[in-house]
Image (cartoon, rainbow, N blue to C red; front, side, top):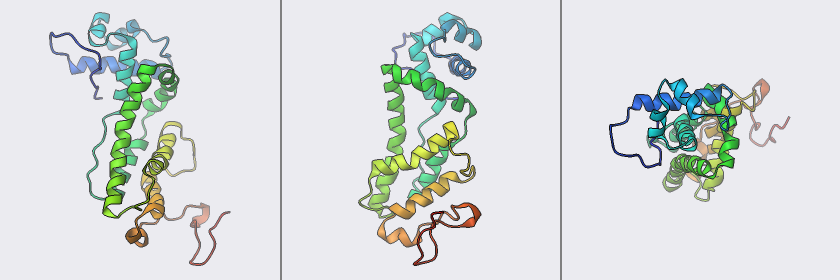
Length: 229
């Protein structure tokens, strides 16, 4: 796991060990995943789990809040870089990362969210990190508008929320057990593109295939009303 440096100032001295940093952050995440609340989490317990002295932890993080903040960012991973092949390909790639199953993250984030909301500094750090990820997807959507792949009147913020919301909920909570596990990002992107593609791309936008039990598609043959039941 890649850990980001804390925003707290660090005194000069011997170079930090990435291995020790990772062990400490992993200790925090493991303890929370096992049921330790953020309030009950102690630097002593973290040090013991990581196999280091408490002084080693404090040399890296001035307090528990700073350590938990870095642990949250490390848990979520680095901000991805799209390849720039096409809007469709980039959106599928980015949404696949959003929805990638992570058992530990699935256990930890529900426990962390109340603490994130209560703690202004932790909330701001989390939102700063989230904003970087949102901006990557915004850039793809804006590029699609510029190239004509997407509707020039597209509401970028609404499209962003519509694309990422289902993937986030499905990854964190498995909120809809009937959604397909395979190719969910691809199917979601294709469904969205059918509605937000630019005029020149609407006839060539991929279809999502059957979206109802029994193989029925969401719309019948040309001229037929949509299937609603």
